[in-house]
Length: 225
Length: 250
Image (cartoon, rainbow over all chains, first blue to last red; front, side, top):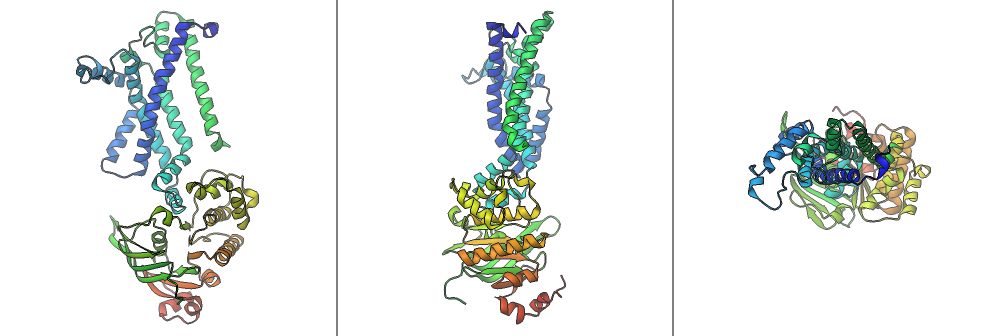
């Protein structure tokens, strides 16, 4: 407890980097995942079944394997890393970790959003259109009705990346002061036998998850009333 | 017939559905049908006659495959849908209302919100009072009974002050009290605001209670369309006579 509240700069940096990397990754995957999930739920198009299978596979994909693919793509001898394009992040940077976590969170957000939207009464769309909704307004109405599930999708995405260790370890490298996040620090401290520090980091991680879910539940509150 | 042009005129309107089992099937084939302004037009006929399909076409929830729908000076068809502002002058109450997971008042306000009209508390209270639900404004919509939900659906449609209100079997499976409230509200809306009502019903007695004009649909075609007096007491077509007597074999 003393460690948690000591105001240690290194610890604060680890917590801040964890929140920053996972927060940005979640933001990007939410921005892409919610429309993708809604599209898959509401539109019928050629290849939809294949895309849904890919999303479901992505939901169950081991993060460490995603980390491995990202590593291969971003390494200097990899497909993207060798091109030296400015927008391709280098390995062992927070940007590379964000890429890996975005890929992990996207199928979770898209898949759960799709399930939530598909759970809305299909007659709602035609009934809101009859009340004068434009195509965009009717899609928004469906998303609003599915909001409990859509929020749960974002929570699942956040849970999938904030607690993830394999991918960030591979592409980030757990470099002190640069790419060390809560999960990789816990692994390191445990390996060093420094259990009190590992435990303190673990409590912080659980605390972040608790606080996040507390606010999410407040956001969903109207539905649970 | 009155000299003013009708609100709707349908000319050669057809609608076809394609399914894997039965292939292409024509569900609606209307040669010429007019729906006059400010009247209650009741569409009767057995299940599968095309009544609900016709309502969906009148609200542009789906396009016709052929033909023209004349509405408020415009001609619309398979390739031409009226602009949103014109489409918003028509609304439908369905047999099974789907309400938003919000309060009763928010459901009634929904259509106004779509039109960018906020701060309509007085109008919402008025619409809810008209269907006898003014004490339930803040109740979650999911706690309502079937009859109450249908009355909310009617209130959320009425508040939009539509030129045409389309009702697709709105009282099917409701108890006599709720049927009474809905029929009374619809009649009052027609009388006080001149709203054109197009009502689909199986119930011949309900048609007799409400209709100014009645049309019988069979297999997607209009068998007979006449004023209520003629339709019920001096029909031209033998199939209409059979339907009115309740003898029609479906």
